[in-house]
Length: 419
Image (cartoon, rainbow, N blue to C red; front, side, top):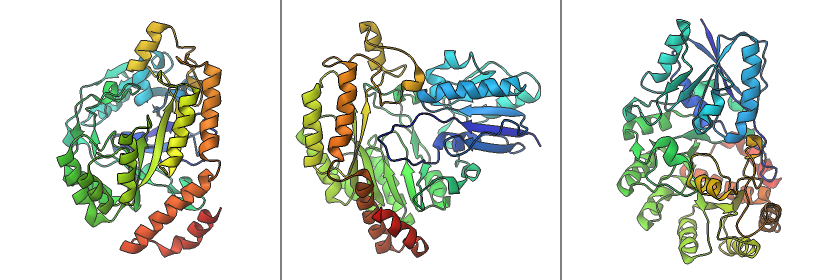
């Protein structure tokens, strides 16, 4: 049996964030498309080390983030020196396809289902691996997308203070929105592509973790679909987090009933729209983690200070701050390139924790100072660990109420919440 080594490269983490690792979603979806006759060895370099001496027939690099590229290039070079062919895919490969093609044997662009990745292995077996497999925006039939291959994961690696991390799952692909700093429309198209509901529920039911992350780009694309999804989730009694949910009283109530624990909500201003949206979520017992982008053209230092005060006033449970970063194939990058505002393309520094462009109303150094200020000011009176514990306590109460809490983990979780 031939061996495939599937690698998810490490990258420089944001120092302000609490250190934990979620099981990556891209690799488990890719692994589901690898022919069964291959043995799959998965290495998440964030929690594992690569043993370059271990025998392998081919290497797949799954790269999601721009800042993974430098390490991906190093990994590819070492394997190619050993005579092992390397194929790269994933979001960052699509964003940087021309560059990635210079340091691997083959690039795969697009989604892997419906036999598309299998064709790569067929060519490999015949010694005819092509330099490029281009399925970009040639999407496979949505019903060809089956369950992810989570068996490749070592669950013991994805634990924080004794508590198992959430498992990731998706119910749809594509996004009909085209937000200014986002590359999703470029990558997955602007057509909302929901998976067959019965297949989604079957996959979710099969996951042996009660706590999930629905990683769909948005749960605000179709009220009818999202209501059907939440209704189908209710009997499973899973507890889940997600990206933004449609801001509709009926939808939010149904989400809470379906097990929504908390959501990542973009907070881009201090308007009543945001205030009311957060209140609706919290009124239904859903926690809110504000996703806050710093450095947009309407912001200066005073604006950022007011934004932090607003977050504290509306009592969001958590906040994650990131500096606007001009990733390829986004509207913001096209504009900044024309204006000559991009400072460099040192991809390892594209972590969203550093200013890699010139802001409109402050210097890059000042923006980085305000980034540090945002983290320090928001978590000054209640640190991240305590805010996480508060959210986690609410989760445990929900699980105890519906009988899904696992008492054997009580001691570990009690210790976690007290630290």
